[in-house]
Amino acid sequence: MSDFVNTNLEKCTLELFNIGAIKFGEFVLKSGIKSPIYFDLRLIISFPELLKMVADLIWEKMKNKKFDHICGVPYTALPISTVVSVQHNYPMIIRRKEMKSYGTKKLIEGNYSAGEKCLIVEDVIVSGSSVIETAQVLRKEKLCITDAVVFLDREQGGLKNLEKNGINTESVLSIYEVLNILVKHEKIDADTFTKTVAYLKSYSEVSFSKATRALLKDQSRINMPLMERAKAATNPLAQRLLTLMDRKKSNLCVAVDTQSSVELISMAEKLGPYICLLKTHIDIIDDFSKETIQKLKELSEKHDFLLFEDRKFADIGNTVKMQYKGGVHNICDWAHLVTAHPVAGPGVLQGLCKAGLRDDRGCVIIAEMSSSGNLNTPAYIEDSIKIGNSFGGFVIGYVCQSSIDVDAGVILFTPGVSLDASSDSLGQQYVTPETAVNEKGADVVIVGRGITGSENPVERAEQYRKRCYDALCKRFES
Ligand code: 5BU
Image 1: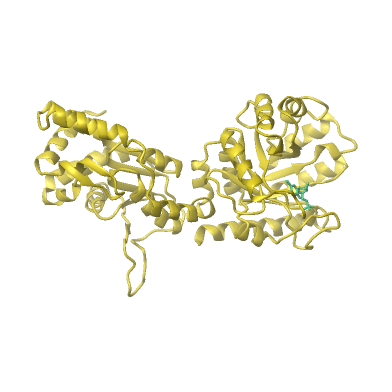
Image 2: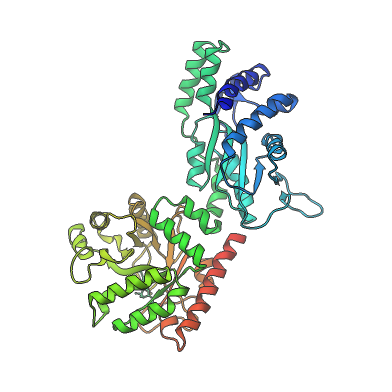
């Protein structure tokens, strides 16, 4: 901590207490929970020196971060961010709490462009609801929100809640530091201190308000841009795939279902530039050799796509482990991703995890097949997600046909997509890229014969890539 921060934290806390911005008694917070301590930083606008001190301390936390704009959460943080903006020459934007009923009807005031980074400033954080509400409005405008700085953290779960939603939040002061300073200077007695600490311990994990949770469900995975989802992802391979999709502007996975190695390699070479994933069924290859794999690996690096073996593991853990690592195909050695049916229970995942202990190996759980008459009931899908959640370090997402409820860092894959047909003669059912992405909530679209069976696979791949990615981008705007 710099000398500036060290000396001013104590001074600032005492000043806030003296002007009545830190109060002890019985209060009800915005979330409805009771509290024996309350911070009312609205008061500081009447004390310009104190306002400047708060702004300076906030600036110390912000100054090493990269951002294009500052946005204070209305209303208390508005004057604080204005002071920071003026002193350090960073443009500000304002999020309106109420939409204007006349004129532009804008929700955000100020000059900004899509893709720019905005840092959020807040005075006090409890659950983080107010920060996320502001972040979601800004995200809707395609601003990138990855950081927030708050003056006071009440240590009631807010930082963790925001982190889960892709916002890394730092605070100037913790409520415990405030209490210690006040006791040290005999502003509060030991009894008040103990009671307040006991309260904080029993309310240390306040979740987002009901209204905020409803807002997030509606917006998080579906409407969050890929890079923000990459940040929200806890799984390193999910982060890598989401980043790759953003970099290549492709959410297209091509399924190359051929029995010839030469054909497989030739498709990988031709289609590589358009795809984020190449999906294989390695056991259908007639002339399989180690060279096939070597070439696939080289092309995956050359064209920046990941290898996805659709093996559909489904046995007991011990067998799956050997099927994954070993045998002639030795899948674990080369496939970044594999599919698994969770029908046999968590053992499948345990077996895979045991063999694939690397950051660049992961699994996609098949929650719901695309074929007609499949046995995937809603209860089965729900249970699949439960198993997937408990293996979050290894499971990066799900194959499904509907927008199932998963965190923003989890990826949904949808096969059964074609522009040419509505079904095949063996049970496959098709929809268009737009239906897959917008109605079924797909992040990655899997297309096989629609591309590989066409006269000009390259032209067709670019057509699918564009339609799938455009549909995905449209979701960020809605
Ligand atoms: P198509 O040619 O686009 O029908 O190929 C679809 C691919 O996706 C094919 O490799 C299937 O094995 C794979 N697939 C599928 O079609 N449906 C599913 O539910 C799952 C995988 Br899981």
